[in-house]
Image (tube, rainbow, N blue to C red; front, side):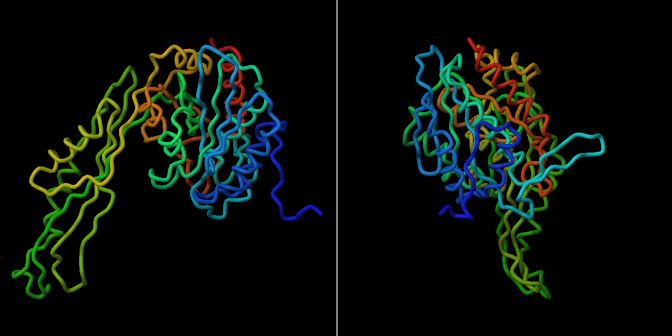
Amino acid sequence: MPDPHATPALDLAADVVTITRAICDVPSVSGAERALADLVVQALAGAAHLELVRDGDAVVARTNLGRDRRVVIAGHLDTVPINGNVPSRFETDADGAEYLWGRGTVDMKAGVAVQLKLAAELAEPAVDVTWVWYDHEEVSAALNGLGRIARTAPELLAGDFAILGEPSNGQVEGGCNGTLRAEVRTSGVRAHSARSWVGDNAIHKLAPALAKLAAYEAETVEVDGLAYREGLNAVIVRGGIAGNVIPDEAVLEVNYRFAPSKSAAEAAEFVTAFFDGFEVVVVDAADGARPGLDDPLAQEFVRAVGAEARPKYGWTDVARFSAMGVPAVNFGPGDPLKAHADDERVAVAQIIDCERALRAWLTAAG
């Protein structure tokens, strides 16, 4: 007897909006992607034109048609935690535009739905395609499923061009900024606050660093024709022992978002020099990715989408492809400003438009 509580199978013959809603209604918070990954494998199992590879909770589907060029198209299956926004629902705004509302609609299950439908239907694309749906994107980089595949089976990610389905309002966003986190540390002498003159307040010592940050004007750096806005900001301040104790240590955590013309090592040098006189410890850093828009496949794709390419300010997994020598862009439905928001929602028209544009390009590329 069928299990009445079982998750319904994915019907990839349905329209792309219906598919989006179906996968949004399958909870897949980071670390719990298995049920959705299972559904993806089941939905594609009958596609004779695809070679399927399962890697943990990541799924790779490849055409092997002997085309001259191969494109890798990837999207992550996981979401940030749910907060009363599953199951999904439709809503219409004051202007009559229809939206699909719910966790993952923007980041990035609408993009995954577009990819799944095309993977199932395009048996004879103009280029060979490697489709990748992976786990653990929203958590520590060490757990990232795309990173895991890059380490253990890099041949599965080999290609001439890559498209990551990150939300980009249906536009092409080239490359991405790099990101670095550093701790600016100060030390002092602990004392009773009633006799503060015998102590040395470590929190007060952060004042010059905070003042310098407040006065800092971030640069806009042009890289391969795209203007990347940088940012250097305090994100966390830690310090203090008790309400009557002068603190003997304090930490200011800063986040530097740097243009892809800089390496992570160069970014670390900049931050260390910026806080000259302080103890600075870099705790995390990731290179950005240059736009890669000089690649012929990238240029064809931008023309097919019919819009001017834009820079991606946040860090995305296009950087992993860039590190492998594969030019990559971000392209997907959804406003990035709504990613992770409690009112996360995607315009239905954008989902349809993205499917149409990607389908047209994959059947005409080359």
